Image 1 (cartoon, rainbow, N blue to C red):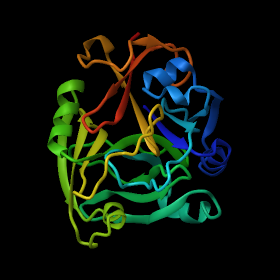
Image 2: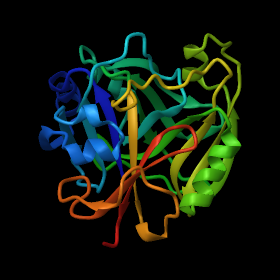
Image 3: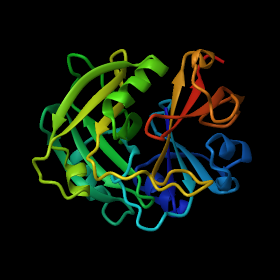
Image 4: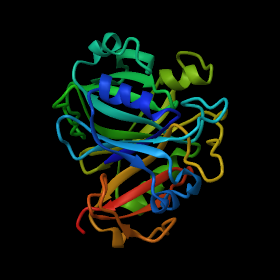
Length: 291
């Protein structure tokens, strides 16, 4: 898996992701024309970017792309990719460890009602990307959850803000062969805070799995949610792209934004890849794990 966020200042973002979270810098260069075209973001060609990996060496990456932040944009306010969840050690230690960083902690570590198997912390980076630091305490009867093998380990769930949770769920199950798992209804603090809702306002979310492994969480967002303000030729601001591996890219019947191509650099590592537009306008990049 790879998750991509846009940031207004790559150097400052690297101080946070590498200097504070402890990720390794794999590469730092510029977005190629081919990559930009594949994301339908031609104006991002030539922008600075960096690919990072976790100290555990897990096959998971974070890509940061430098791009101006649209005026007034804020996390958790629009449809599309809403957050990336990372598996961490000792969630309760992170507020002190991140003091003075560019991360704004909007949800201190806590147990979530109805989700007793993990401790979740929510923070926003300098690109208004929402990142959850989740400490896994246990599996559930239907789910295997990855325990962190370093202080900040791999991304394991990507959250999609949906105007039609059922339609988004069907899109991922029908087109990618993923499995519908449990639906939870909880008082979702980050959503309630973003929209000025009462603390006890309830949000329904559905987990989408590959067998027992959670991949995507689809949240039903309130009616006040706006369409992601994407400037022409640019990436969606904040949480921009999710990249997933698939067993056989040729079995995907969706139409890619540009033809399938092979890319040598991380996170592709010589494999074939293409990008697709999801049900909520989100960018979903797929990598063929076989070839």
